[in-house]
Image 1 (spheres, one colour):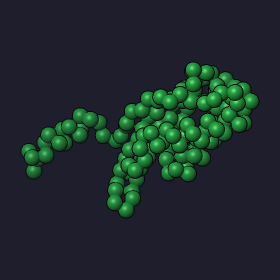
Image 2 (image 1 turned 90 degrees about the vertical axis):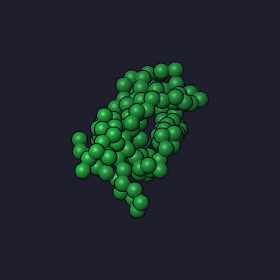
Image 3 (image 1 turned 135 degrees about the vertical axis):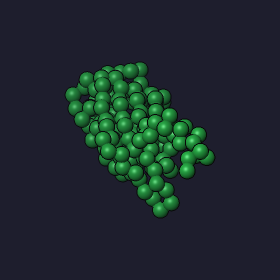
Image 4 (image 1 turned 45 degrees about the vertical axis):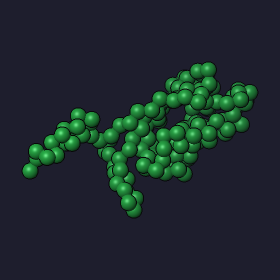
Length: 133
């Protein structure tokens, strides 16, 4: 996978996030026929609208892994709100089994940053700033 730097008028960035999130009570919603495909369609559309690039998106029976690239002005909670908010309302309207749920997703999630350069490389670069020619 090639890392592509994002450019705005005043920034150049490469910010990748790995998210993992679950349906409320770890319900196995992706066992319901059509839910996984529709979730992916809605997520891709919402991310495209918000300027979030999906690098990878996979669903297991009771959780989602999402690897995205975003601009620095997009906060982590903002990304989760976009995805969870848009998909929760639509999926509960479209699938009868989900309509009884007051909310589809838990409020919690896991997030980790990932980039082109390791932490060790950055530390070395900072530590050797004055000693390099």
